[in-house]
Length: 295
Ligand SMILES: O=C(O)CCC(=O)C(=O)O
Image 1 (cartoon, protein in one colour):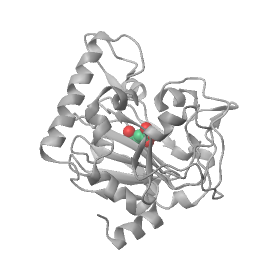
Image 2: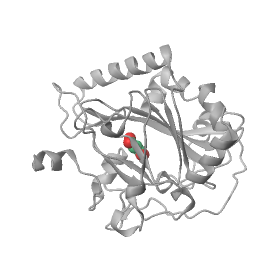
Image 3: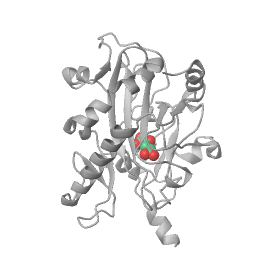
């Protein structure tokens, strides 16, 4: 359950952290299953439907950057967790009684090299007919300022939708030099393992390289009110309705004006946000390669 004050904070700032939501055996299972799937990447040479690999990945040193949305189809545990009443009862306060999972993924941010994610708004990737859309993030590991926490710019969900294009194509990253935001005001969303972050779909967020010797894994779920329909369209109506996690679907989208930019033409590099962001010529966060070069 959320208090009135938490709901007000979410509406004003665009984010919340719920400490230790997932605990005990459930957290243990989440971590053990993730370890197993990552270990199985030893047999994988290139990015595929499940794995997004770090540029330095090899069969002897498996380095997974992200587990892609296929985890929800392939593993009952992940499918069930996204529908857990501990989560959906919280979401109902923010999105109403009927909720659909839009997507999700597990970002790894491995110890010492886990990739940064450039500043962006999820809304630029998947605009909907209304912005009752958010993402939750469950930390699999204790997360502090040193192992690459999710960082957010409070209140930006009430502002413009920034340009996420470079050289005429979508690149999934804002140009930090051109958006007149004070990134020094970014708030790191930290907490012990099992804590859940919530961020509004229009909130500006990103995360830095993992400089610590501890990994930081974050299971992200994207959710929408059932009457928020994707502006990019519904390819498979049955599959769309199969993603309901609470209440009943509707064929009456609610249309509420909000600033939108379409993620078109599509990014040059497909497969994940890391791949999309290869197209940005203007990085804010230091990359692993830059750090190694700098000694
Ligand atoms: O993993 C992170 O720190 C950021 C993730 C994110 O914003 C995304 O994948 O859209």
